[in-house]
Structure formats: structure tokens, C-alpha cells
Image 1 (cartoon, rainbow, N blue to C red):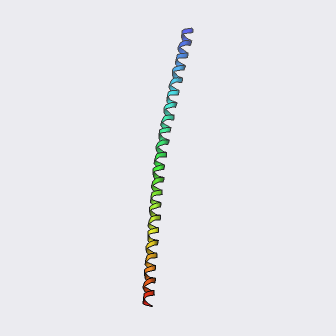
Image 2: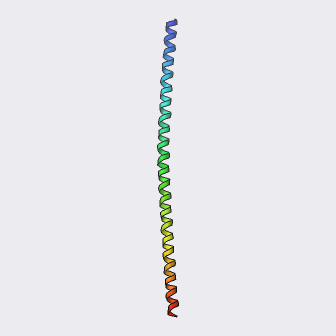
Image 3: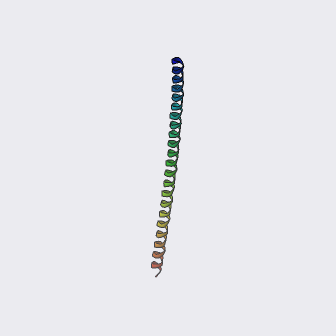
Length: 81
């Protein structure tokens, strides 16, 4: 009987060990997947920030060019008087 119970205990321990190993493996793969997602999200956000900054710079440049053109027209009108 004691040999049978020792075998049962060993079988339970082996089963428990396998389940724990699988659980750890699953947690590790979930962690890696979350890390990859976060890294991709950060890259996307960085790209959005960059393109937004580029658009703001382009708008600022256009505003400056328009202001210079207005000043030029005003100066020409003043000289014609």
C-alpha cells in the first residue's frame, strides 16, 4: 500500500510540476506579447508626435511666408503713394 501511495504522490507532484511549468510559460509569453504591443504603441505614438510637429512647422512656415508677402505688398503700396 505504501508503494502505491508513493507512486500516487509522485504522479500528483509530476502533474503539479507540469501545470506550474505551463502556467509560467503562459505568463512569460503573455508578458512578451504585452511588451511587443507596448513597444509598437510607443513607436506609433512617436510617429504621430513627429508628424504632428512636422505639420505645425509647415503651418508656421506658411504663416511666415504669408506675413512676409503682406509686408511686401504693403511696402509696395506705400511706395506708390
